[in-house]
Amino acid sequence: MKTKFPFKPGSPETLLWAQIDHEALPRHIAIILDGNGRWAQRRRQPRIAGHRAGVRRVREIVEFCARIHLPVLTLFAFSLDNWKRPQEETEFLMQLLRQYIRRELDYMRRNNVRLRVIGRWQDLPAPVRADIAHAVESTAANTGLQVAVALNYSGRSELVDTVRRLFIDMQRNGRVPITEANLAAHLDAADLPDPDLLIRTSGEMRISNFLLWQLAYTELYFTPTLWPDFRRRELLLALLEYQRRERRFGRVLSTIST
Image 1 (tube, rainbow, N blue to C red):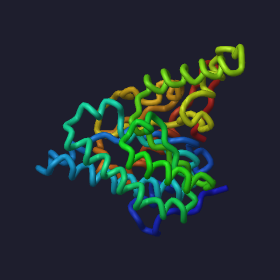
Image 2 (image 1 turned 90 degrees about the vertical axis):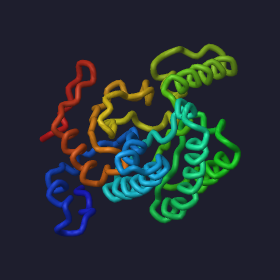
Image 3 (image 1 turned 120 degrees about the vertical axis):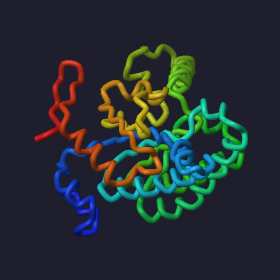
Image 4 (image 1 turned 180 degrees about the horizontal axis):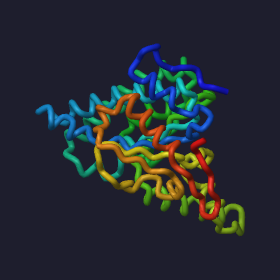
């Protein structure tokens, strides 16, 4: 079924959208939101201005993904390494996170968007945890776009936590085979499909300790565009590039493009 046209006729995105095979959209897109600080620096503004601009971009991309009926969008928002930044900046990021969750909760409810959180978010400050838990619970029954936000996250720490959960399961239930399937079943948000497409903004060409297990066969797309400048047009360009590629899963060849 062709996805309903999500733009106003004559908009800059119209031509790009017309080139996309709506039957071959990815099930899951993951994005590393990078470049807020450089965006602000280029404009001779404080770093917090870049973070504010980055949050506005999150709203636009989430709305777009909901319109095209993308099943899953994962956003790398705050890593464990981010605690190495100045205290003033991390405190501001926590405040910004709370503001975003509170402001967007009504949108998520009205538009059938489900919020998921991965990472060690239980270690975040108590007021942040409370807002997250409330939003996750309030949207748990929604059946549309699932937005998984990686908070206080690192891929290595997720694997450590996964092994710990698997070990506890083995203690409770006796012998449990150690297989790829069992390990994957104990990951954060294990019910979500692996990403089909990873996008990293700002020109950096690394995955930076993000979804180390899940990205095994993911298509990687790097763009020099800084996250606050990453608009719907840039996401459409990423989708076009994704659909030009041939996906290989070991010996299996799956052709995306027609």
